[in-house]
Length: 544
Image 1 (tube, rainbow, N blue to C red):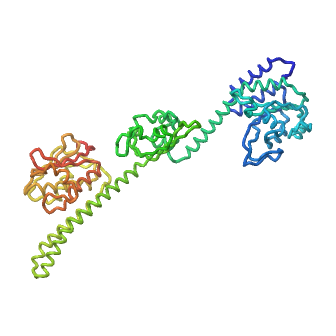
Image 2 (cartoon, helix red, strand yellow):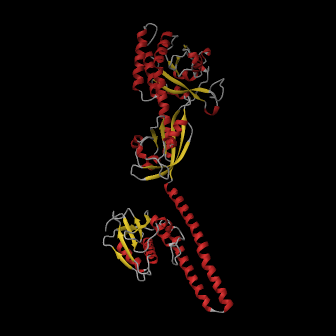
Image 3 (tube, rainbow, N blue to C red):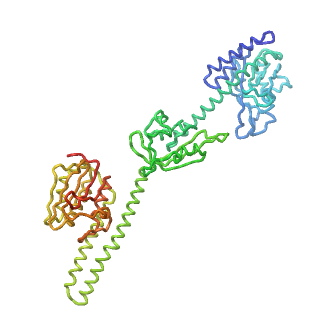
């Protein structure tokens, strides 16, 4: 045993033993248990225990302790080491906790000094568990504080823990042993503190990871430098990266190609994570990012800073949701609303005029009895019928297309030409027409209107030609008529626009609507030898 007959070498040996114990321990609890075992073996104690401060549950004092103050911090049993035969005492101990100055352990916690009790059963010992100790033969004990690291005086800082050692062999006070234990644990207190702090941090990380993993929303945690610290499964799935791949791409990585939903590059100041790191205030934005697959997705992202005691931003938590489909739906609704407005304009203007004609000639027929006045009225009715059918076709087309499949352009042109009232017009179809990926029904509507437009506006016996674009990225429909004034080429696609004839002015509007629904682009240009030329760039065509 360590006693007064030994010199300081015993304390040094104990300190060295404790250093090895701490180095091998897996956790704070393991380190405490190993420390108890090392001291008990060195000092020939049969029983050792460690008590650490913990808040009293629900503010209720332990019923076995006297003089407690409910709701305050109390000492709870953290670890024990005992030789066989002391199980009953351990069982009695697990139901006990100590407030300040309660029993041997509580007095050392309050005073910060070691205390020796030669007779646990003596009245002045105030040993709360005296009966349980007597039942297993424990008669003497000592309690020593485990101080915090940093050199603070015990009176200035509560102990990190209180260690208590009990024996079945009567012992008088042994200041040398108590001093050796205090010195040994004092030198290792810093390691104890680090171990406990590390365990607490690890537990917090496990708790946070658990919360993040059950959260259905994608969440990414950034450190103070903007690097990805952790991300939950939902976030990894949303961007198509594993944890390592996501950490590799921090907020500065250009591969994200962060932009507004309209495609404008997003400046550093407008990025929510950067803003939260810089200002310490929450930030949010709707942005577009390019995923590792090359796919562009739109996200709503909100970043909230985690600020430390010194006011500095320590972390930023970013939660986001993929709104690509909802944004596309919103834009589709906007487009449809715009189309409804255009329809209303056409209806209010183009239907009102023929209705007025019908009403006027019908009134004349009634007044004069001449049925010849009904001829112009019938023509006006026919025009209204054509207009209504065009409006319905445009309304049903909208921006939606059905399933696309390869369509041979030459065959589609032949089918569309058969539906056009071509009169004396001739059709020339180039040999190198491509195959396009399209909804056959909607594509047929597009071709019918382009061909009908050429027949209607290119003269009495026009020649209409369908050919592939020079770069193979689409096709063109051209005629040998008077052409379109360059200043009016864009306006011909407006609803209700007509360059003459009896049309409703919706044919080319339908052409552009169907083209854009396929992701194509259509433009009016001039032909090489005069006439009008409409180019449809599919950008997805392949040479037949």
